Image (tube, rainbow, N blue to C red; front, side, top):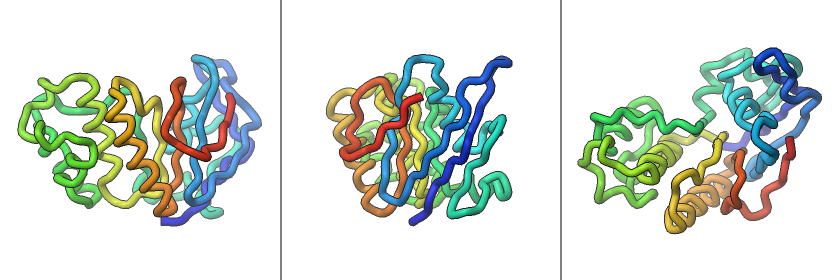
Length: 199
């Protein structure tokens, strides 16, 4: 799972204005970076850029020395991105949702449900889930496959304290296997020893 994420002199524009420029950092296996800053500082933009969903206005992102733009499919396979929207189809059940994603990524849908305490809800239509339950389902997708880079935008949105504790266990396990976590947040996250990157 090991790999090194290297961001070099990144700049991003949104709506014709520069959101950030000259941003450089490294993230090594097992590390976590907290992206901090006020609303509009570019935290979500940076995560989308690192996920390959946006192109930088300047600079580049590399994984183990290779620019990620050279092989977008390979970068997509190594990355799990959780944005503000949970991207859940209301007519599916949680187990159906995770089975769909497991066909693309591998992994065990039942174990993913269990990791986020969703097993009792496995057969309910997703339209009946609360906001916190939908967020937990989106987080469960992180456990499918073996992607080393997790990019999380406000991952605790809508979660109760027990669910935040479960998330802490997932993050610790991922980092223990050599995975990297970058998370944008306004609230404390269960990421002991994380470095801070202020935008």
